[in-house]
Amino acid sequence: MNEHILHRIDSPRRQEAQGHDHGESPLAIDPVGYAPPQPQPVPAHDLHPFLRRFGDEHASLLKELDAFEEAILSIGKDGYTRQSDGKLRHFFGFLDQEFVPHNRREESVLFPLLRERLIASGERGKGSDPLTATELMEDEHAKAMQLAAVVLGFLGLVFRLPDERSSMIVLDAALEQGKNLIELLRLHVFREDGIVFPLAHRLISTAEFDSLQAGAVATSA
Image (tube, one colour):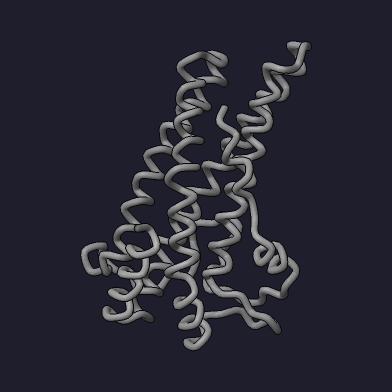
């Protein structure tokens, strides 16, 4: 497996935020995780192209997650095969090459301005150093990469252990953590598409989105 992704873990800012008093959050959810208080839905065609690109990339991620899930289920049923190994390699390559740059664009270009607007509009926690949806999304970015690193680490051990029983235990752990990764990323996409982007649509002007888009292009050039 390509372990380059292992180095994409966390940032000091995210680690520090874990100790803060989060208070109420725009993304507060019930235990099931799929019934948060949502702003008014915004049709995709009404979103600025800058936001639509993130949504399109989410659609690609969801397709990759479906394929990754199929690979995990096939391993649980038929064992670790060359075909399933290829699918896993493809998925983690996608995370490294597509998901990480996607997250970086959100965090460096969209989230700073959105955070300012969320705080100004009251869409924030009530603690002494309140968090907004942007910090929560950054935290999920980091958690996803940490979980991916765990799965890769387990998979790397499977064929190094001399004892077959131990190998099977580690493989089972890898598959279970892979399922957790799938659920985390699907929920993350649901939150960003259904909550964060509609908030951004409401709080950021078209001219400002044009400027953000120009900055993103300049950064990637």
